[in-house]
Image (tube, rainbow, N blue to C red; front, side, top):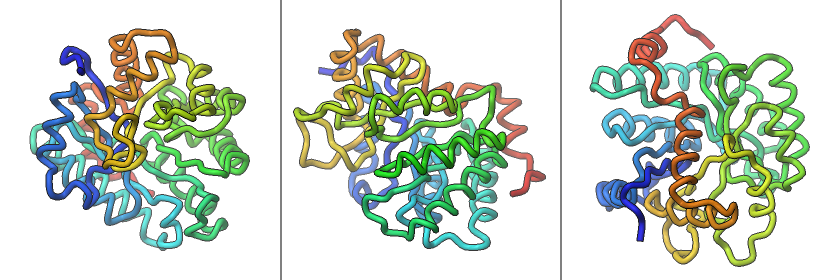
Length: 295
């Protein structure tokens, strides 16, 4: 049973998807009952970004990321960056006017996916770089999708770091659903990234994600569900949802030899720092209402 006193943060979910349309209020209620106080909805394309923003504006526990997934890189056009920039400014302005904090907190998920290759690899690479530049222009951290493309992803991220696209005073972003080796983790940490872990650490045959989890510093670890995907044990085969974050957190605690209370507090604090949540209202207003920033 989940401890109601623990506070959890789901840093990556897709609850704006159709999978949640029929029981969306119940999904949020179950999350709250499980101690999940905040959820970041990662986007796959422009339409999905707008859907996430619409929900986040009116639900204080929800936050949105905007961006184009590598699967949809082929849909990127000349005006995509400008439209996403306008969406961020409009959504944050509307959220503040609705009496909540800014609601768009990241650019993502973006990156490379050479497992499915639903978009040409050259298009993926080009759009990845363009979105790193967009995130820099909007002063947002990035949510990185990196599947079977570690070497090229690292190359692009190192180039972006050298070009000054990552904020020095804040985390650069998060490597979503980390599935790489433990040996690659230090290179990502050196670029300023946090590392996100999902349901796979609960799987019986999990090895690589558990090895990687053990080498991630305490201040760089965040948890995510990737709902409706990657449902943790013992619910595999069912739709995933944010209320399952404690299952992932409890497994992380077991692996790391910590208490679930410590993991909950630590990963929530890391997520707040990653997405810069908790800034003064004056600073939030200044960032969200500044219409002069262009891409």
